[in-house]
Image 1 (cartoon, rainbow, N blue to C red):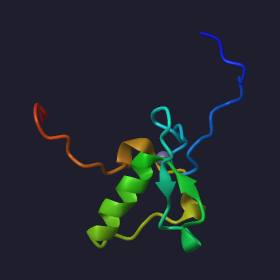
Image 2 (image 1 turned 180 degrees about the horizontal axis):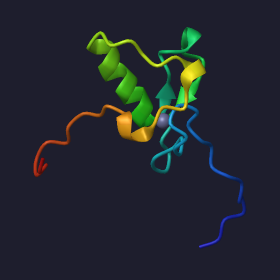
Image 3 (image 1 turned 120 degrees about the horizontal axis):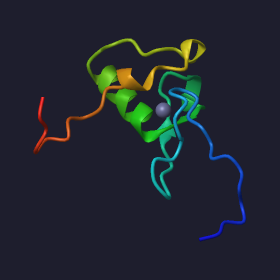
Amino acid sequence: MTTADQSTPPQCPRCNGPLALFDGDTGGRSRATPGRSVEVCGLCCQSEAILAAAGVELVPPAEWPVPANTLVVWPTGAGSAG
Ligand SMILES: [Zn+2]
């Protein structure tokens, strides 16, 4: 497999992870930014949505990056051990 474009994949400014988690992933926009002007990865977008729904104050962009291991994601359900 060859790829003509060897440029670095875009990074999520919130967790410093890859912005696209799979081919075609467009991530989302951070609700912690004015007008949701900053694009973040899907995990960060989901994490912010969950925290916002829970009434937790979101980490402001000035304090990014947020460690990826603190992201809140939906439990995957079946087969999860611990
Ligand atoms: Zn992220």
